[in-house]
Each structure stands twice: as structure tokens, then as C-alpha cells.
Length: 341
Ligand SMILES: *[C@@H]1O[C@H](CO)[C@@H](O)[C@H](O)[C@H]1NC(C)=O
Ligand SMILES: *[C@@H]1O[C@H](CO)[C@@H](O)[C@H](O)[C@H]1NC(C)=O
Ligand SMILES: *[C@@H]1O[C@H](CO)[C@@H](O)[C@H](O)[C@H]1NC(C)=O
Image (tube, rainbow, N blue to C red; front, side, top):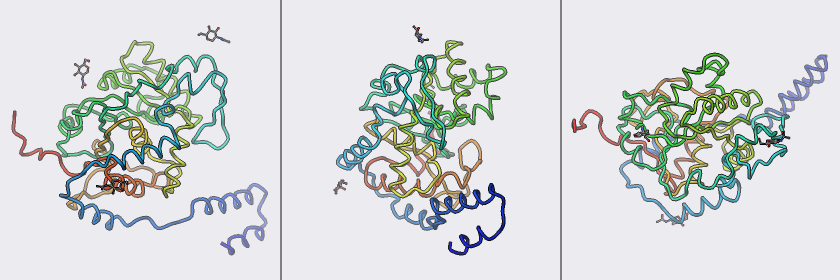
């Protein structure tokens, strides 16, 4: 560190470059290079628990809920509502350093009145992310009352045995709207058709995390409203996302940003009575050492400097072991031996 500090002022760099140098030092300071937990050790730890019956621990659930309630109030704040985001309120983008926005009339009118009743407490929920390939968990997932999914995943018949088909809430990152639907600047039919599989679900969008995400998110809202689609767009509340980020940072997750999956698990733990998560397995081999793809539908890895998947996994695994939520890692049914019933 001292060596670096010494070098910077000595080289005669223009002002811009020395500013960059200072910035790099700050960056190193905020995000120190630390040792990632060893993948093999984690998998070993998980294997040791296999076969042990999972038991829900109501005390632990209550304690953890209280923590979430105190830091982040998911029940009230997970989505933007007229109540928590009143007209002309100034809000800061949670994924940017310097931008804020003021809620104007047009945007305000897109919010539901209050968040109560959006997700009735007392529900059991299934959360599906990443791989669930050959898991045979479809029926079990659909058995939950409230099913949440990440990032507009495909739900075609070929996957339903593994991931089910029911959805009550699905997240959509603005970047996916850009990549897959040209930001809805041209024809919107492909988008409208592709979300039909989600039936009457909420489409939960972090519209106010990055400045570039706001317009595509609003376009999603108007597109669906204009065609009278059965899905309803909810905007993630940037204050909620920021608080959840701080909460997990306090527990030792060093990432520039949490994954959508962890945001959603946090919301679910605050909103639903029972939470089961499927496919939250960030490693490239399964419990039997077989190579697996990252998402069940592709193998696109998240930007490695951006999220901290093994650490997120460890936190969730800890919650599983403490009986707060259930993490399904094993196959539910052997897909090969399923009767044709
Ligand atoms: C349940 O959780 C509480 C609080 O974390 C803990 O004190 C207790 O030992 C746990 N009970 C069982 C049976 O594991
Ligand atoms: C805001 O919207 C409401 C309802 O759409 C409308 O009645 C009101 O006149 C608008 N106010 C302004 C300042 O545009
Ligand atoms: C979609 O909704 C219809 C009517 O509400 C229902 O019959 C159907 O089973 C739902 N499909 C899924 C996949 O949930």
C-alpha cells in the first residue's frame, strides 16, 4: 500500500490521471482483495449435511424476521407504493453514487396504494433461481402458494418437470429488456407474448437502481398496461434495496451488488411464512461432482467482480442449517424413474 502511495505523486501525470490513481486506492481500500471461500470446502460441508432431515425452527424464523423488519421493513417497503413513495419525494438511485430523482405525477400514478395485501403473509413460497436442471422439483415448487422467479426465465414444457410452471412474482432487470427486447423501442409483441407464461404475476423491476434502467422499466409498465396484459409491474423500492444491501454487507458479503436472488430471498423471508429456495447453487459441479450449467436454461456466469456468489451461498446455507429457510439441493424426484401417471 505504501509503495503505491509513493508511486502516484512521483509520476508526473495530468490531473485527471492522478485523480484516477487516488480513486483506485480508495477502491482497493473499500473492496480489499480477500480470500474467497474455497469451493471444495463448501461442497464438502454441504455433503456432510446431506441426508439429515431439515427442520424448521420457528424461534430462528422469528428472530431473523425481526432483524429484517428492523433494518429493512420488507412488508412495507419492498415495492414502491403511493404510501412509501409520495409525490415529489426525493429518492436516490441505489446502484449509482450521484443520482437522485423526484417522484413526479406521472410516475406516482403507476404505484399501487399500499404494499399490504400485495403479498399476504402466511403464505408458503418457493423461490426458483439458477439451475434446477434434472431436479424433478416442478411439482413441489408449484405446490407453494407463492412462487417467485428470477429474471424472466423460460418456463416452456421441457423445463416444467424441473422448475414447475406457476409464478406469482418474477423479477426483470432492465438489462434483460435491453438485450432481449431492444428496450421495447420497436415491436413490443415479442415481449408481451413472452411474459404470458407468467399468468397473473407481478413483474418486479429495479427501475430506480440505475439511471439507465428507469426508462425501459417504465416502458415495460406502459406496454403491459396498454395491451391490458394480466401481469402487473411493481417497482423495487431503491431504499429497500439499499438497506438490504447494507444488511448483508454487515454479515460479510463483499460485493458491489447483491444478486437478484438474494434480494428476493430477503424480501420473501420478510413477506412469507415459509420459504423454500431451489437452484441456489453457484458452483460449476453438483454434489456428485458432475458438471452443471449455471442457470437451468443457459450457462452464462454472472460478472465475477460484481456479485459474490459463494459468499451469498454460505449465508443462505447458514439460514438453511438454522431452520430459517429450506434450501433444496438434492433432486426431488428422480426424473428417470418417474411413473408415467
Ligand atoms: C432454534 O433457534 C434458536 C434461536 O436461533 C436456538 O436457540 C435453538 O437452539 C434452536 N432450536 C433447535 C431445536 O435447533
Ligand atoms: C396529477 O395527476 C392527477 C391525476 O392523474 C391530476 O388530477 C392532477 O391534475 C395532476 N397534477 C399535476 C400537477 O399535473
Ligand atoms: C394461469 O391462469 C389460469 C387461469 O387463472 C389457470 O387456469 C392456469 O392454470 C394458470 N397457469 C399456470 C401455469 O399457473
